[in-house]
Image (cartoon, rainbow, N blue to C red; front, top):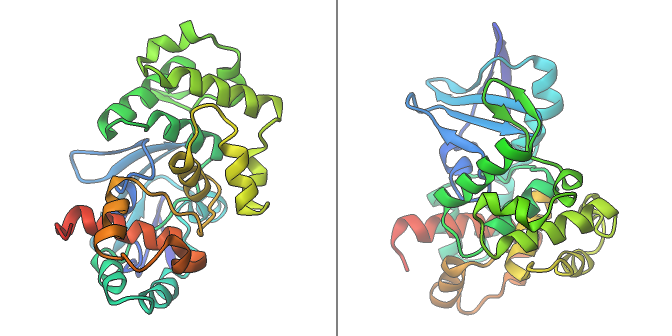
Length: 276
């Protein structure tokens, strides 16, 4: 994608392949909040960003060219050719093509693997407003202060030193012991999250499911959204329903190395088109 520097901002041009709302509200991330003016305000690692759809592109406020090139372009996966991927997976099935065409601008974010792991543990049997509330309280209580009312996501090292009593403040119920187990295994090096993007995906799944409370769905979410394993295929109730009713002749393996992107198109399609 092309971009230009505008005063203290960056404008991404030719954004047909980048639907900001669909990307930030599709359930893959939890620290972006829509503002009254339609922009989104989010915290990613130690950075705070306001981003919005403008008349001539997508505008990132108060971002230097260097920061955009070294951080935000990677975070929003702007170097990956989604048009080509969509064209390839659309050939698999006419219903999949329809799903791809329904929301072509969804992109898979490059998120921090620890934050993804912790967030999707919290997401189990939970709704998005409550997930976001728990995560925000976790950051306020245990994260590092950035500036004003913004806090970073607390590291695994920080969480690993807490007790279940400390975590009870978050009111995340049965999930607190899963969070603590994950933090201890990551902090000790028993689970190397950085290796998840490099090792065989079967091994990566097994490592993640060695964490108490991490099952197949959470593991797939962490692999797709936290390790950018685009072959990972999280299956919640919507995806299971779609696979049964729209794609009964397929398994996730039939969607190939971009199954995770196909999953995101399918998820958005079935939730918003009322097809299932």
